Length: 382
Image (cartoon, rainbow, N blue to C red; front, side, top):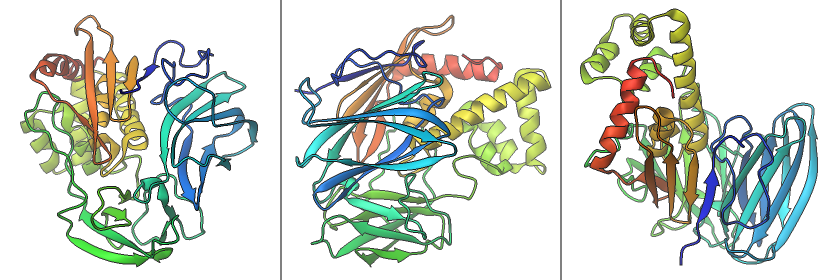
């Protein structure tokens, strides 16, 4: 029997909406960018730890660990105050002996009453991605799992019996997601087709010489592993005209996109594209700010084997915005959007395949997609 978590993203984004410690039917906002807590869970020997980065401010951190997502007494609980004058990193030890369990993380911004909450499965099995750890040149845990070209990264595994780690390299050639009504549904398989493979000792450092994707695993026969991305230096933002143009592929016609990519002055061509959509410079600035802020947030929230804006979830988040409700299980997510004046209520199912959330594409999604694209092209933001 699947356990389902209900996540409602609505007017209570910044208010106190929590009434119980149950993992089911909770009101949480994992995709709200107003208060986003970056964290990573990793294992060391038989223990689990959570590394969190807090922005400036005063916060209350609550963490509960449960054996299953069902109701019940927590295996472990901790609550503590976090005061930070600047960005602050803390580490929380999760004293749970079970090989698999669930953590329920809640952070309250005391001054504004904003909240962040998310639920995640923890696994200590040898092929779990949480067994693999990336550290920068200063020995700091890398929470975003992305490294810049020419920067050293140390790769280690929590299990002492793992002597070597196997790395597969893929050039940065993964394309943006196809429309939700497309008949083609591509799932990237990191266990095959790499252009280069090499082996590292457990705890060895290496320096990426090219941009692209590295897939690290403890066993060459295992499906499980961890992605390490080497993106361009502007990530998670986009800073150059070619990259800014690439990211509007979702809302451009084929001939428009071709013209933008081949323009002599791509920056000017891009400005003219947004002005044509909006009709005024002030409106164009609003459209540009909204669209590219969603690109940045998608890169933070949804990056896996490629930049977050290129993923299925990133695509839907950029075009439709935050969902009003999210249902989650271990294997899938369902996003629900209320109807608006032009579009009926719409839902999107995402299945977890190869550590990627893959959209269940359907011809029924063509109408709501076209409505949203038409609105963007008319300069309307929902």
